[in-house]
Image 1 (tube, rainbow, N blue to C red):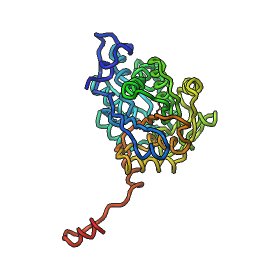
Image 2 (cartoon, rainbow, N blue to C red):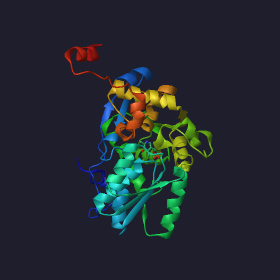
Image 3 (cartoon, protein in one colour):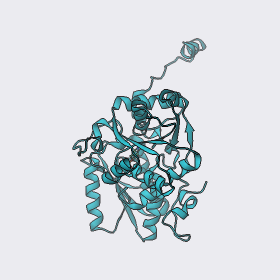
Image 4 (tube, rainbow, N blue to C red):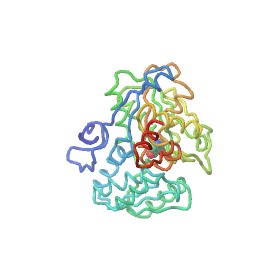
Length: 336
Ligand SMILES: *Cc1c(COP(=O)(O)O)cnc(C)c1O
């Protein structure tokens, strides 16, 4: 598979001879979800963004942001991150031969994401503060130093991420409703941009975690809390754009509880065969909670892979079955 810049270059701000930093991102599977479909009374599909090279949709934006940084002669990239942006930035910086630095909230990022950022050789800075503070500080830092900022405030991130909307329209002849997790609100903004550029206008239902739902309540959340660490954000950088997308698409931003997120997380793994991370499951949790509102064809974006956060998975799953090495014991263990 070509990367997404190659696949969609005519709709992206890259010329034919521009340098492209790619790991073969995009072109992710769209999987029919019979159990979820039956429960909501609509045809529901899952966009498996965990199938991107570093395991989240962030790679779509990162191929563009890092390619643009290389084109501009940058030597270093930096981001604030709840985890996946850090993993992705670190990988693409490694591929490009750039120095990467990532600032994450101390103790608040999933184990897999931390392992990725470290393995790719990024300098990982654990901030004694939350994501919103981390983003404020990196924005200040790049004003003082020649380092490219690759958070979703970088317009190239949205350019890359809008290609997921193109793929949905390529794969489905009808799409009435898109359900999507919302944290910093870059992705929902990017999807809407992609849909509009392609002349489509499905409704957008965005879902935030109850303890981190600034867009639902219309005010910042000082200390956001949720099991869905990727969307633990109290002051979304793309606030206005996301709300405009909601208005234009006749969409809704609503909240789901951690319990509802975890129910959907387990359901997707056990019944649909799809292991996503908790934040991703909020799209399906929201659809199950609020319904499809008459939509016939629905796509839910599953933003990141379940392996990112093995700790939460092990807390939510059944325990392993211990067993002595005899056939009788194995029989009891397997059949019992
Ligand atoms: C980044 C991320 C989100 C939130 O996307 P925003 O663009 O910040 O709204 C949701 N899920 C996962 C897994 C993410 O990594």
